[in-house]
Length: 167
Image (tube, rainbow, N blue to C red; front, side, top):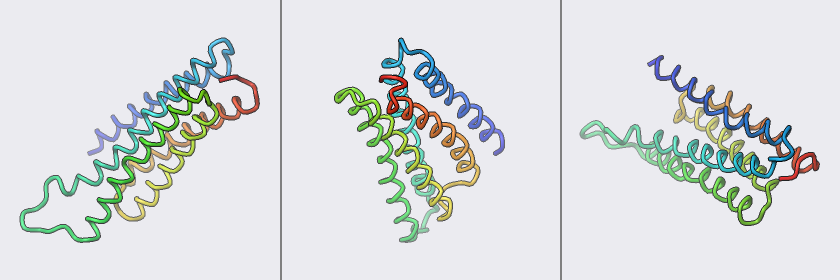
């Protein structure tokens, strides 16, 4: 059981690389800032969608292989429904961020939406841990990566809004 978590930690750290590289490009390479912001928003939307999809896994893990003759309790069914519904919210937020970036040319709004989406997701996952539907080791990993992602997005948003970089 320990090995998959170590692999998950390594892959999560690798998943931070695009966030870090695009943030460096946005903050320190004024010639390529608009492209870097588009790349950051696109990658952020994909990763935000991924964090929502994990909730489908949480919801379906117990019902995928039910014990024969053992009905699921109403509380479990209710929790599964909430997880399934919440699982699509991050993807929708990411999609709206992409629309803000591509259609409305509003990089500040797009980055803000991603920031809000990642924050909402980690808060909901923390609540889920308290209700027994989110594993503790998963939540610790998510908090660690979420703090880094939130700081990156906040830095980029500040740079865009303060005029340090034009997105």
